[in-house]
Length: 56
Image: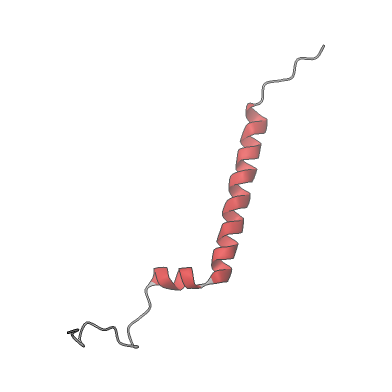
């Protein structure tokens, strides 16, 4: 039998992680920012590390 003291009451604060993951706009924004930073950084790194093209 479950102990009633183990159940969380409605007055308990919601943990920070749950509040972040429940905010869909924050997740959307974080996904877009991370994607743009990674792909832009990867592209810039690729451009910087390309050897010069030999001209005929």
